[in-house]
Amino acid sequence: MGTTSISERDIAQLTPDDVKRLAVRLDQDEYDNPFDGLNDWHLLRAIAFHRPELVEPYIYLLDLEAYDEA
Image (cartoon, rainbow, N blue to C red):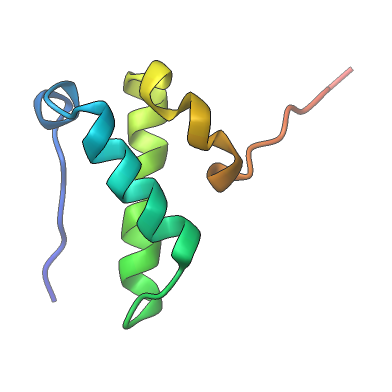
């Protein structure tokens, strides 16, 4: 079994249209197996860390919550 990895350079080259296509796939959630969806989710999460401006419209797909440790 192989793994797919994406580098910071790959993320830097993504366009808003690339991220939109990724978000549409995640939103539709019609994957042949659950690992494909999980890989897309991890990719969107990586993009959110490196280029948050691209993910802003799709942040709901990441289901991130702010934690108050106080």
